[in-house]
Image 1 (cartoon, chains in turn green, purple):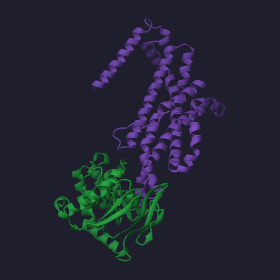
Image 2 (cartoon, each protein chain N blue to C red):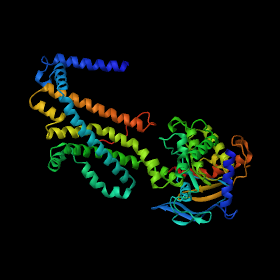
Image 3 (cartoon, each protein chain N blue to C red):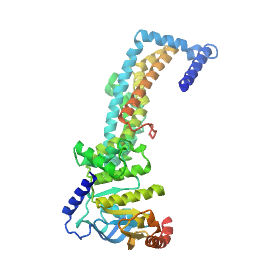
Image 4 (spheres, each protein chain N blue to C red):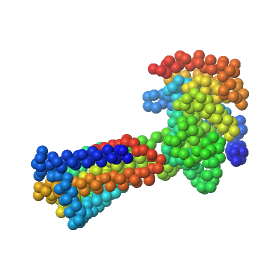
Length: 275
Length: 255
């Protein structure tokens, strides 16, 4: 069953891919102000299909603003954000968004929560049931479909939110510090799951975090932000294998170097961000 | 079980003290006595008076409650989603809200007469504001982030309303409803006390005007009983409507 979904996903993506090597999301000279407050300034960045991109920087440096513009929640003040070559308009349905709060509907069971996007897409009951079972399996929640969210642990709630996110099969996933509220062990487990699932379903990911270890360990590329208004200070290629064990990676030489470098870079910025 | 026994114990002690104090510590015409009240209540029950008057009051309270709740919910939902309109109307709503609704009774008498309509509408006006404000707050408290997430899933305004706004506002709606029960009773009973020849409010003021203290207390017992029953009905509805809510929590707005 899972295999089948993966197959479908890949098919759809290939057919809709206009030019294979053209970047998926392009920010060109993007600035965004809210009233007098400038959130980001002069951002230029290309996101490629199938890439796992982490955005890291002190809080309040406009990382989330970029995600919001990718989702089409608001337009940039200057510059342009394009998705597959066309400017992003309100509600980019090809992306899915997951935030620090899981935003589950607490009056619906886990299965019914995951079914929300499928109901919106007007799928039949039978189809919904099959798809939900498949997703429960994928995120490791099989057997918990009939529970209400407030009966679940924090990690399970995240899994449920993830399943709901994947249900309508968006090709790009936007994560805004989704695991910030989890304890260290659970966070590591969820990070492993995310890498596994994203690779399995071949999704493109923009992952905002202020956790430097997370920024390196998850990423194919890591975008480092600084200051207020936020600008990109550096884009790091993370030359770690695609198939990586996030647990033992902590002993990897390259990983250690990269995180050390990020720490050095961020330390002064962090102090600034504190004020 | 222990709890219930303890409560019954408190009640019994209180009634006993009342019975003994009456006529000894306090003059009887002021406080009557539990036994006299029970006799009066029993007689009224037998001659059908209680049920007749209670039926009328219950009808007024429930009809006013339903009307006020329905209108309050509807307008609360609409204004909750229409931010601009709500902002425009805000001062008018607040001005109207700040009137003690009972003060409208004389006006309602001029408009609707002293019949049952006036009590229903008075009750509905009181209930309306409680339910409206709670519903409105409930709708406004829906996280915009959540709405955005739904929008990205392809939800239109109707989906957002049905899948997110209504269910998340329902907790608030029920808070408003539960708060409204005693106020619905106020509307009906005050309406009857001001102008009526029927209903528990009339029974109460009639007994009082004749210095029939036992009768006043008997009418109060009937009113309390009805309030409790209405409360139980709303709580029951809340449990049916919100199976995920094991325990009600009290985020509420009150007058």
